[in-house]
Image (cartoon, rainbow, N blue to C red; front, top):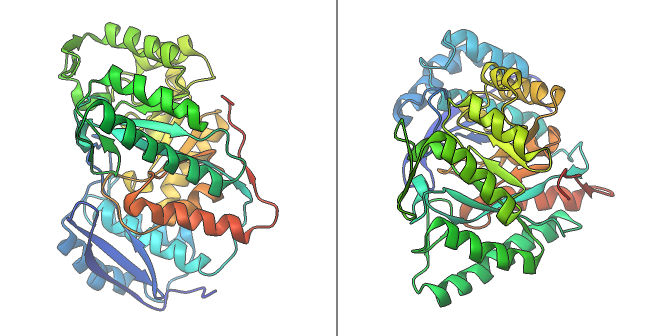
Length: 387
C-alpha cells in the first residue's frame, strides 16, 4: 500500500446512457462518478465532464500530489479546496471520482475485511423517469431464499428471465429501460400482480422504488396508467394498501421529497417489518436524515456517495443511520459505469441490502461482490428484518 498520492489524472468516459462522465486515477487505480435521472433537489452539484477533467488535471493535481493517501484526509482536502456545502465549485462528480479512486488505491488487491454479505436488491421491472409505462419507477426483488451471495444473484437473474417470458406472453412486447429493467405496456397494479406471482415461485420478496417526487405536481400524484390523481392523504392510503395487498418488504420514496409528515405517518402505520426507505428525501445527507429521524420519517435510507460528493460524507450519514436504527442500503445510480466501488462500501458499512440492478453493466458490481464472496473464508448472508 502506498501512503501518499504519487499520481493523479482524469479523463472523460461514457456512462450507461452514452453521456460523458469523469474517471480519475489515483496511483494508477480508477474511480468513476455515476449520475442519476431521478435526482433529489438537495444533491451535490454536477458540472460538465470536460470541466471536471480540467479541474483534476490542473488544480487538484497541484493540491493533492504528495498528500497523505487516506480517505478522510483526501475527502477533507476536497471540501477545503471547494469551500461550498454542495461541491458547486469543483463539482460533486469530480469529488466523487477522486474519492472513489483514493478508496480503491488504498484497498487495491486486498481481501475484504467483512464477511457478512448483503442481499442484492434487484430492479426487475421499471418505469417512471427510467423509461416504461408505469408511474412507479422500480419493481424490486429480494432473493430471501438464497443461502449464498452467488445464489442470490442467480435467483434475481432467474426472476428477470421468467418475467420476460411471462410479460411477453401476457402483453406482447417487452423492452429494457435505462437500468436494464424489463418494461411492458401495463399499469402499475397489473405489473405488481404479475411480478408478485412469479417472484414467489422463485423465492423472492417484492419491494418498490416509487420515486414519487417524479410524478407529484405539487398537489397530486399522477398515476397516468391508472388514470388516477391522488392527494397526499390518498397517496398515503394507496401505499398502505399495496404494502398489505402485495406483502411488500421495501418501499422507497413513497411520497414527495419534502413530505416528512406523511412519510412519518406511513412509517408508523406499516411497522418495522416493511422498510420505508428514503432516497430523494434524504439524499445521503446527514442533516436531511436528522430531520427525518426527529420526525420519525422512514426506517431505512439509500446511500449514494455521489449525492454528497465523497465517501467520508456518505459514511457520516451511514453512522447516523445505524445509531438511530435506520437500515442503510448502498445503491447504484441510473446512469452507471463499470466502476464497482460501491460493492466494497456495501461490505465495509454492513449494508444488509445492496441495490445494484440485475443485468447490463451493473453486473460489474454484482460480479465484484461474487469475487469477494469466493475469496472470503466462511462468508455469510446478512440478517433481514422481514425474513
